[in-house]
Length: 202
Image (cartoon, rainbow, N blue to C red; front, top):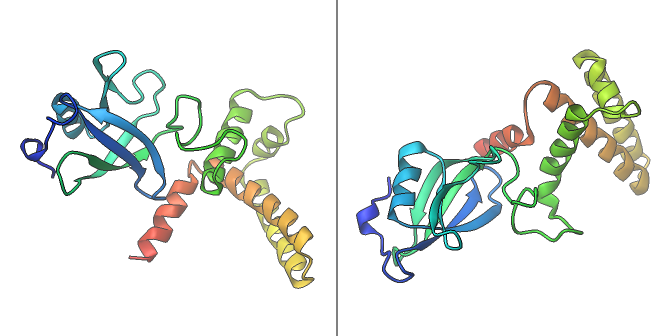
């Protein structure tokens, strides 16, 4: 575990930058600042705390939104004046509702798409409408959802065998969507799948 006394807080008025990186996907999520007390709270609770330079106060990430950052590992750089924190987020990290603070509004990173789709599915469930296919599908139960996954997988294979790229893209998108709905129904997320893939690469 990192030792607070070894860190140099003197260069930036008692603060050091902390880069938050997704512990599973490796994507950079945000940048914040910590003083010694924020880091102490972080190590004690296992959830990320920062020091707000605009409000001049400590704050716990997710204290109002519930989107906490759960720590997996912490590293300091070679000069001991900045931190890299590997964490697993509970929900979107950015205050805008985006998965990461490092994005462009009209062109999200491809690696964000699983989480964006999960968020949309959750919104459909929480705010259902009569014409929502997602709500209708989920109401049919897991067996029907799994059947749809199988159907979309077969259609994707057929499109690929035909070497029809446009059709393959379309069917793969359908498959990806139905897989995400199935994972949601099982209380799983793409982070669980990523974690297993990373485990296999060890």
